[in-house]
Image (tube, one colour):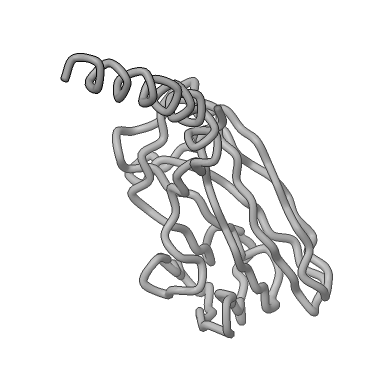
Length: 174
């Protein structure tokens, strides 16, 4: 009986070693968590109109579509953002998405706190989308964040026009 038990243990030893060697490969395949909600779900976004800024938000397949119909001269009078994002100070983040616009428009991509004084927290990029979907990717380091109450999105009140966005992700850099 002892011989049988020793034989079984010896046969199992290489299997357990092999399984342990494979564990890091599985860990390497895990993806970093997307901090954003689905891009093409209107419930993921706050579409904010201020003063005489006007527009609408719709869905077109896998894209969210922002249509600015009236501007005021103040860019943030039309904006769209995803709120309640838990950014951390001194952490590096990567935001990726695809964007297009048939009209020549300027759009700002910004991250900020989602409460008064609404200051930015590390991301401010000016974009001029083309009439075909183009990949965008930006890295930033967050600073002066608020616990679980930050936002990322687009300032759309610079120009009238239609902007489509799809496949937007925000991940912490490793």
